[in-house]
Length: 278
Image 1 (cartoon, rainbow, N blue to C red):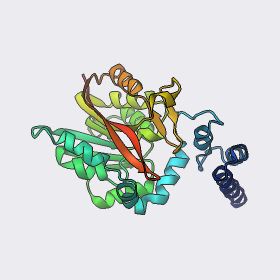
Image 2 (cartoon, rainbow, N blue to C red):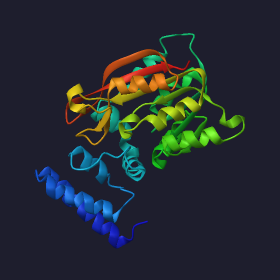
Image 3 (cartoon, rainbow, N blue to C red):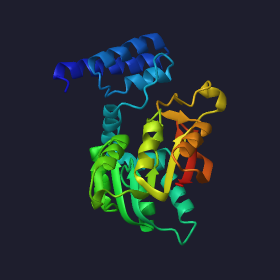
Image 4 (spheres, rainbow, N blue to C red):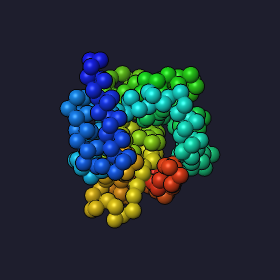
């Protein structure tokens, strides 16, 4: 844990970095973001992601856990208003429309990765006998708990949760028939551990449904994923499809281009994917 003096220095360096970036001085901003990383290797400010978005640092494999937890803890109480109102986010509702399209469809056990305040639990709960939610933000989990749409809730990072669940024993840790990950992939670059964890914790015939952000093909520079100017991660369709096939989700019934959200008034393109395990 940072001391009061270290936190003061970190806050000052981060605010100065933001000001320099906004003023069009990337070199000064980058130097200050590197100072933030020296002061706080856990990277609560997300300096590594900002450096990568500026093209002045290597992209981390995912957004730092401390950064994501802090970001969502800070916004938990107003999260729904910001996401569904200001940003026009409607992925859980779009996914619910797809899965409710078959009136005979039902799942014994659902896992909502990155459950946030429970939007997917609210829209998909009637399709499931048992619903588990997990989020890295304790404040988000508290908000989801108030909605009473999950039978079990956990505070954990998505991949770590899947790894722990796979090792656990007992009927309480049974595999899932539906795993949902809406607005999770934009905080992870290299998706191999996530897809491996999903495959290891699902029954045959299970559904994996998720959203992802993307960019124009030329903006990827030949890579499968990259950090966007909005400090999140975008993925190519080819990368996502190859991971689905590799991990046994070869029956893809939806791979739809969608507008994931708006950012400064501009639509952010992405994918809404529904795939089924062999």
